[in-house]
Length: 203
Image 1 (cartoon, rainbow, N blue to C red):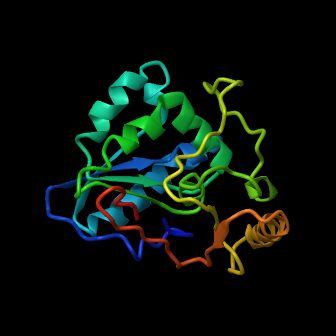
Image 2: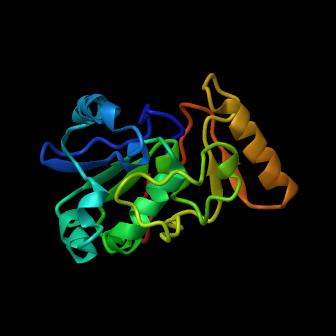
C-alpha cells in the first residue's frame, strides 16, 4: 500500500498480468472517474498489466460473483478518495471475503494508495479527521458498515508531512492515534508498505 499515486513498490508482472482498478473511493465525484481511470491505466501498463475498471457497485446486489471476477485478476489496485466510501463499497460488495480468498495465489497482489491503503488496516479510527465519514453516494445502503480488510494489523495514515491538501488532517489523525495508543503507521507521499509472504502477498 502506498500513500499517494506513485506505485513505486508495485512489482512488474508478465505481459499477461491483469489488473482491476477500483475507483469507488471517488463515487461522490462521478465526473472525474474517466480521467482518473485513464491515468491509472497508463501507469499500470508500464508495469506490464492490462487493465479494466473493477466497479464494486456492480456487485452490491450479487456479491457471490465478485470472487469469480477476482480469480481472473493478478492485481487489484484501489485509488484514493474517501476511505469511508471505499470501505462501505467493499462491505456492500463482499470484497473482503473475495480478496482474502485470492491471497494464496503467489501472483495476486492487493495494492492501493491513500484511501486504498487506509482500508487495508483493522479500522478507520482517526481517518475521520481526514475524510468525511458521513458521505453516502447514490446506491449505497445507509446501514452499511465501513469495515476494513484487516490485511495489516495497524492503521495507515497517508499524506503525513507531505505537500498535499490533506496533510493537516493526516497530522491530526496521527496525533489522535498516538494519544489513544492505537497502532498505526504514517506514510509520506511516495512511501510504501510492502508485505510479502506466503499467506498474504500484499503490496
